[in-house]
Amino acid sequence: MKHYRLYLYQLVGFILLVLIAFSYTGFLEEKKDSLQNIKYKLLASEMQEEVGAMILAKQKATLAMAISLANDKKLVQDVFSNNIDNDYYKKLISDYREYTQYKNIWVHIIDKDLNSIYKSWSNIKHENIAGLRPDLVSVSKSKKPSYGCSAGLYDLSIKAVIPLFKDDVFIGIIEVISHFNSISKQLKKFDTDSVVVLKKRYSEKLKYPFTATFINSEYYVANFDAPSGILKYLEKKGVQNYFNNSYKVEDDYLVVSHELKTLNMESLGYYIMFKKRNNVSNLDLDFLMFKWFTFTTIIVMSIAIIVSSFLFYGNRREKKYYKNIIDSSTNIVVINDKNTTIDVNRVFFKYFDGYKSLKEFKMEHACICDFFVKEDGCVQKDMSGQHWVEYLEQNSTSYNKVKIKYNEKEYYFSVAVSLISVEKNHYSVVLTDITEQERYKIELEYLTVTDPLTGIKNRRYFNQRLKEEISKSRRYGHSLSLIMCDIDFFKKVNDIHGHIVGDNVLVEYSKLISSFIRNVDIFCRIGGEEFMIILPHASKENAEVIAEKLRIEIKNSEKILPITMSFGVTQYVDGEDAEFLYKRVDDALYKAKETGRDRVVVG
Image (spheres, rainbow, N blue to C red):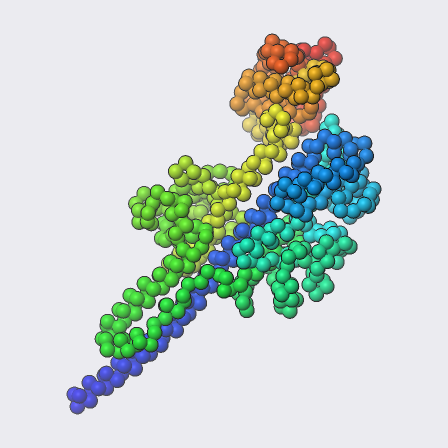
């Protein structure tokens, strides 16, 4: 009887063990799929961030080319006289194509009445395009640069539009147009195929489609190298099913979509990326699964040992697999709760190279957020009382970035957060290095507000800062004054000594003035030989003293050539706008000129 019960217990134990084995195998299979989905989600997020950064970089590069052309004196004179030298611009565009990575560059010149007077891709001239291009109408009214994605009669493309001025008078517009082909070529190097698709309602407006490629004859494709197999795939599946900022894992592909918008935030189309699943860096998922020979070993062990072995090895292997997933990312991946860093991947130590392990790091810092730098536009450790992880989770659809400083090195990262464990309140934080793009952006922003000859700020910056300082003066009630100055008889300097000497005069006297004003003062070149100084917290009496001191120093210095300067001074009156304040200081300078030059007049 005892033997019978023993056999019965053994049989029941055997059945129980087999059930446990099968159940746990199913659990691991389910967990394997879950972890693989995390892998795809992380990769999709990286791809969206990368293509977004590449598009932004190309928009900025296109803007830089447009600004460069807008500063071409011959172009300004040609537009002013309405006499376009086709050979000159053909050579200019050829140089851009040869010396930059962008081979498909188009240039469009428009006069002040929005007549098209030059197209690098067409011989059609003097057609009025005001009714076709509301974006150009907007620029002609605002007199401000514009850039972004745009769809017109020819293509879905990247455009930069810059107003042109001669002697501060608006005379026309220069438009530089580039394409998505260089971006798709870069992505191809990473085994990613691209299809840039224009929405149907915009595709229908195309009259001269650049690539002549469509999906279902309804959706225009803007890049030349879109693979025919992928186009057929989208046609079969329905390309409109990919019009979302998301990703799909289907058939042999990871398909990731990135929305393309105008500066007015209108949706134009989508950048759709295809990556073959077998090109995604995979680990051996099967190593999680216990093989059948493990079952035999399990049977001869006690239930306690088997259960503990399951928990120990399963948990350890699961963690190992999970660790391998985040280590395979090329970006920093941090696992965080709302207080501390729990795990990091290998790339983390590429940047924080003073630490050999997470344990060593946590001896000094609880969280990567300890290295966040306070800077406008960047996420901080504390976001107005809200924890940075919570902030990122709630603003996941927005573009977020952080600045990190470690060992005197500064980096910019785009940052995204995903909740990966509700029970444990764990988040995955993915940081993509955008330092190069941010530095390029900072450099470009510097160029757009800096006078290229003298190195001081330009008129665009002056207009911006004057409005800001007026707003501060109204809010806090402090005084604000302006000094406007002009080199006397500067035309004679150029006529007698040449433009090179004239340029050297502008450079040297700009340095001289810069050395005699306060750090808080804002010094700008607003025209050929005209300069403006914004003086916060200064009355017109203070400003007059400063102007008189500058007048004497300039007259006595004789740098390059002996010159004199005339000065107009005025103080902001509460309630007046920037234009009226500018007019009053300009009138004061005019009186200084009319009454003999080389003097200061207060208006």
